[in-house]
Image 1 (tube, rainbow, N blue to C red):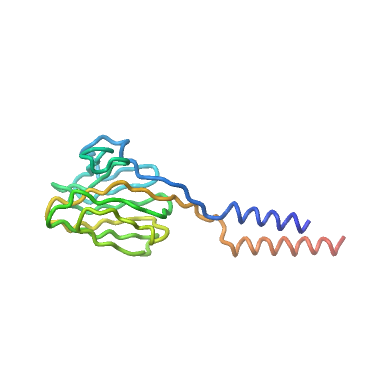
Image 2 (cartoon, rainbow, N blue to C red):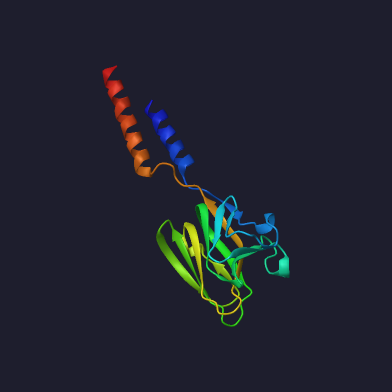
Length: 188
């Protein structure tokens, strides 16, 4: 009986372990251009613009975001703040900034919940690697551009399945099961 309990606990721990799978923000599902909204729900994330509208670049538009497309927050040009809230934690996040002009500058902040994980100053077209920040639930793009601003795209990441039970809870359950089994063996 004890072997069965320990095997079950090991199986639960194995099934509960975090696992990730590759994903992206695919803007190809939206029409190219102004969206008539400041919020886009994408299934695995919600994009919120703090300007007058969101502008979508479909894959291949202008040759800049060939695989998954991109987005910016409009106020005239692409020079306004933007937020991406993922539906779950993501890791190994990479993306691109494009359309930089002299005077463009933005800071990208990475969060896990309310905890700031770090930030990156962007003042050129760049391939950005946020994989060193660990589990990210939200990005905030603070655009301080005085020119046309940035487009952001080609977001690729691993979605992380959260552990349903902490290891300490699993250990407690296993210990209680062991005590219960031992008590039944002594009684029998």
